[in-house]
Image (cartoon, rainbow, N blue to C red):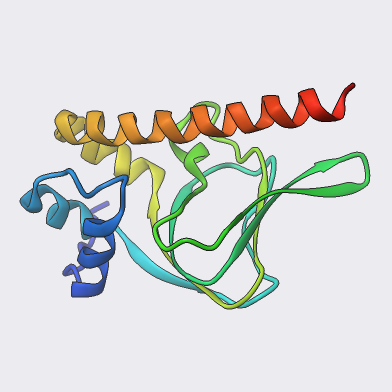
Amino acid sequence: MKRRFRHPTPEVLGALRRSPYFREMPAQKLEEMSRFFREDFFPGGSLLLEEKRPARRLFLLLQGAVAVSIRRGGEELIVEVHRKKGDLIGWSALVPPKQYTATAKALEDSRVLSIAGKDLEDFFRRHPSCGWLFLKKLSTLIATRLHRTRTFLAENLR
């Protein structure tokens, strides 16, 4: 099946250039990669992704607010709220077993850029130096979240 490529819009390119996850990539590579992104709109209250579902897409927040929560027992525990333009949501789309580990819900009308995890992986296979730049930023994000989780557990399991 042949994939149809979009022409990158100035807004998509601008958002990627400002994103800490993509801004260090060469302009030509960024433009090529931007063709795989699409802009999505999520009304307040709608789900971007759901815990334990297959992780297929990665999201970059453009506008709005998104709560990330996990279910424990019958309760929903909000672990993070994204409000910052450029925040990355759904990185499980790149990490085996490619299953979302949390639910992300729009707290208000929100706009995001999204890309299929497979498309991003294919791009990084063709351009390993871009993959390395992204991986450095992603590993920092994961380490930060791990640190916050450990701190939370230490404070709440005394």
